[in-house]
Length: 251
Image 1 (tube, one colour):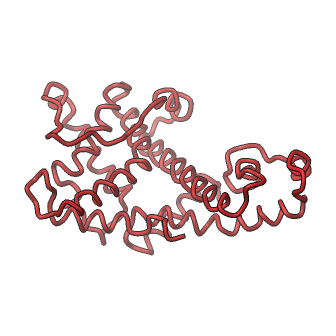
Image 2 (cartoon, rainbow, N blue to C red):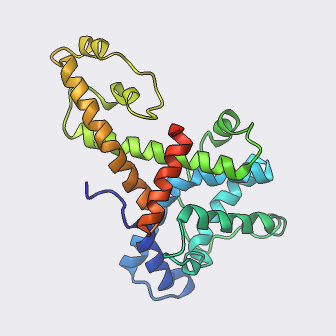
Image 3 (cartoon, rainbow, N blue to C red):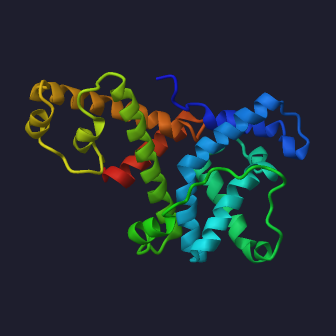
C-alpha cells in the first residue's frame, strides 16, 4: 500500500531545514507545496490531541482553539521544524515541547496581533472539539496523559480509515463498518456474522470470517505505517507501536 505516509516526518524535516518561503528560504515552489501537504497530513493526526492538551493547560475552549491554530502555523512561520533533529525523537514529543512554549507565552500573545504573515490558515477543523473533550477527557487531570490518549485515538481512526479503503477496493458487497467491531479496538459493537450474512444475501458466514481474519492480519501493518509517519527511527516507531497498544488495547 504505497499511499501510506511512511516518510512524512523525515521529508518534512528535510524540507524545513532548507528554509521556508515565508522566511526567504531556498525551498522551490514545488517543495513548499510538498511541505505544506505533509504538514497538513500531520495536522489531521495531531490537531485534536494538541487541543486536548491545551484544554488541560489553559481550560478555555476559545484559547485552546486559538493556540492550536497558532501552534501549527508557527511550525513554518517561525521555523520550528528546522530546529528538530530527525534522528532524535518522535514528532509527538517534539510537538508537545513547543506547545509548552506557546502556553508559557500565552499572556503576551493574547494581546498581540494575530499572526498570519499572509499564509493561508491550515485546515484544523476543530468542530465539536469542546464537546468531545468534555465527553472523553474532562475527568483526566494530567494534560500529557490526555494528549497521549487523544493521539492514540486519532491514530486508531486513521488506521481504520486506511483499512476501510483497502477493504473497499476488494469488496463492495458488505461495508467495512459491518466488520469493524470484530477488529481489535474497533470501537463499535461486534455484530454476529450470521446477522450480517442475513442482511447481505449471497455472502456466507465463513467468507465473512475469512475477511475479518485478513483484516486482523493487516491491522498491525497498517498501524505501524501510520505510526512511522511521525518518526524517522525504526526503533522509536516500534516503541510507539507498543505504547499505542498499551494505551488503546490495554496490552
